[in-house]
Image (cartoon, helix red, strand yellow):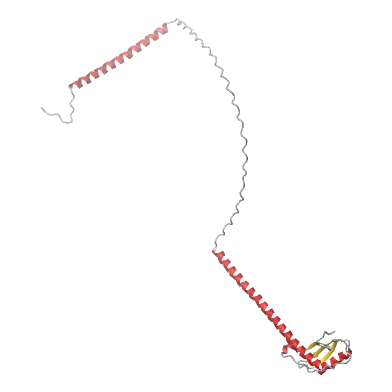
Length: 253
């Protein structure tokens, strides 16, 4: 005996008989179906012929009376619901007193930093400081000049007064007092002199009311030439106005 290859399948005898039986059953069913279809077709043809030949109308179908509808039962009326009692409304709430807060002032916006503007501001500040320093110095200088001028004027006035007193003292020493003078009359003279002190003229500006006193003073002025000169040449006065009274310590009339 030759051995079957390992991949060949061995069908058992019982299984073969089942397969054959299944094939036969399918064949019988197929034949039955084919025969049944043909027989039904023939019956339909015969029935159609018989219907054509029949002339009498079929009896009318009995009328089917509709069943009476059941009377609707009266729907029960719904019992009226009790009306709800209105609840008393609560008293309206008292309005709350709202204290409005004062709006906060808006903070000023900070200026943007600009180096150029800052430099210009510093330069302007420096120039303003310099201008102020110059102005302060000018005012201080004016004050010093005014003070110096005042001091110089005061010193000149004192020197001029001293110079005039020496002239008056020399003239006073040359006055010959006339008799019969009452009171303390004053005589005013304008005297013109040269830088050397020489008297050019003596003119009576205001008479004393006592002619003897006026004449005595005029003679004394002319006699006192040359008049004393000032210690400083800047104090020299060409025109002098001199007042003479008989009593120097008393009040002149």
